[in-house]
View 1 (cartoon, one colour):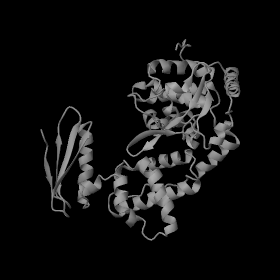
View 2: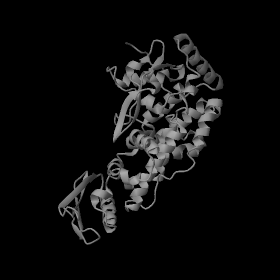
View 3: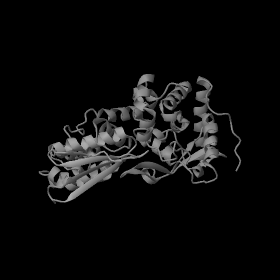
View 4: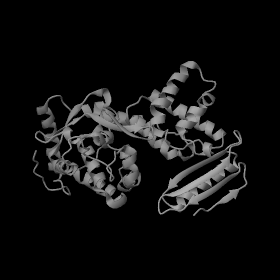
Length: 379
């Protein structure tokens, strides 16, 4: 059953919603003023309310003279179509770093999003991720600059009203990274109980209270690993005889999805798995089954996880603010590999000794709680 409404606006369009149990199919049709041909566009939505919101956004764009195809264009599509116009007037020596920033960082992180859906918050988090990935100030500056120009063109075209890429304060994050290098403990959680409290709070705030989110945070905190590296961890990467994790890959954004690639510097490294999290790791291995290539940590539906996925699923910003841990906004990752490498050594005895020292420190502060009982591993 379709609900049709003809709308006489800047561009004449008609809308309808095909009512299904799920998804609801929202559809719009219009005459393209340039080609004079009948066009149509549709999207599936989880509810009738979402379908109506999508159609309303199309109607508002049509009132401003935008075709539905332009109003729903992704950032990657819009940038490709308007790059020359957005970068007009720049010197050749400036074009190369701008275009590299667009190709290597903007498109993988934001290219799949519709231009009108890119908000200040989305850009803020993306810039933080670029900084956490250890890109230099000049690299991030050039990447933001090209994004600003593209979004400014979208303002001129009437797709959006305010440029969300004009972010401020991002350079202060580099000072935090420098602070980590000088004194990483100043930004750490005070004790084991605080870590458990954080993990439990994130689980409680997530949909269906998925325990895996807490496991990810505890594992990342106790291994000094990035969320992308935790996501890339496979069963075969864990040596349960010596309790060492060989970090070989990381999950990173790709156009419209997530993908796995090698670690930074293309070199693997070995990280001790301290006694306190061995039961957790053992349980994850058993849950993964017999496939050695299975991921140790996944989302509730078995998919890859990322910083953005974890943040959104657990309402990270709200939780850490409530607990007074605002300095954790970048989520479990050092500003420089030097911070992590300061605790890592090339041979197994030293790696094991480093893990034992951390375990002894945690035990001296307070005995751990709220983790599964030890599990006997069999191979």
